[in-house]
Image (cartoon, rainbow, N blue to C red; front, side, top):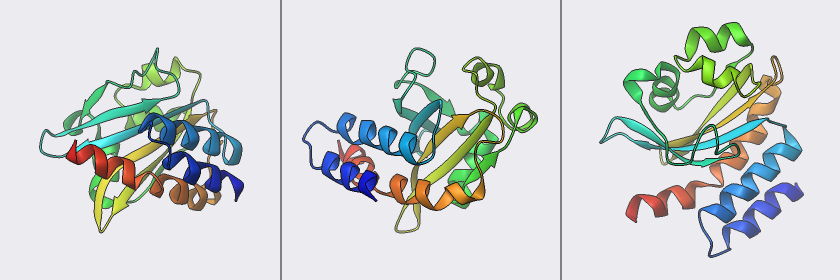
Length: 159
């Protein structure tokens, strides 16, 4: 898995979190494909998830926050530590209050993968694409690559 090796090498770069997240973006594009990728850090103390990285920052800036109270799927992924796949526009419309913003990117499917360390959800990786792009077969590779970002999220907790 050369993409994992490239991500591992990027994690050694002192320019974090940008180097690590950019390598994650490239690896997931090569192995799974996406039109939009975001990485969120959970801030349970504030009741929000904050966006740390976005492949489309003009629409979803890396400074955005979303309250768990306004994002039922985000809250479910955080609490259960289980991934979610929304297959099409009907799923997105049903499960995401900000579905119009998602549709504006040309996306109608989503894969949310939690990043978990020692039983605690730290954040999540979100991949968005055309309808029915994501399948359960994508989950293992997304999980492996998402888990590789644990050092970045742990460092950000202490910063």
